[in-house]
Image 1: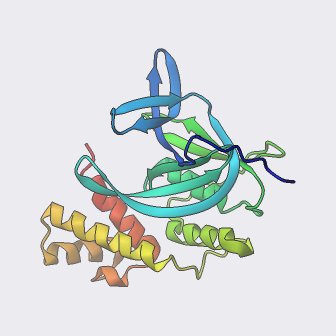
Image 2: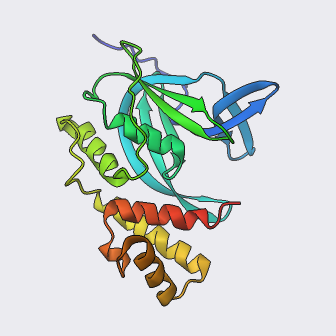
Length: 230
């Protein structure tokens, strides 16, 4: 089938970013929104689900209010290319990862949904777009988040093999991003070398960040970021 291409001026095919937040505008609740950085304006998206194909997962470091934060980008190909951007330590990111690890065939369309919880918490819901059935995953706060991300990336890159989280390793760039982010956060906290060593021993029974597993490193960065939460 040949797609007709219309020549002339058109809208540039830039991705559309979606952000997660439980809020209300003009009496209507929403769980995700668009943000215009030039105008500093929020535009709510009142639909609770986005249907499309998961094409990519990536970790990115972005500055917010003068601080660097590691984000999880969930790239969805639909009528447009959408990028759902959320913090790696959010409940939305973790419930998404737990569910996506159970999806057997990532070549099929999915519905990514939002569900508001208590105290502004937002959870992710993943559905089979064909059957409309929800992918139900049990909550596991100790899951290998970095392993799930890498397994999903590997499957999206071609083999679509069933998840195998035991021996997976995250991409080098992702680990370097997390190490750089931890460097910055430790400096902002004014921790001494002995304070950092003591924290690692207490929480992970290890004396250096290079000895942390990828899941532990991701958890470590998340804990450091929480020191700056208002």
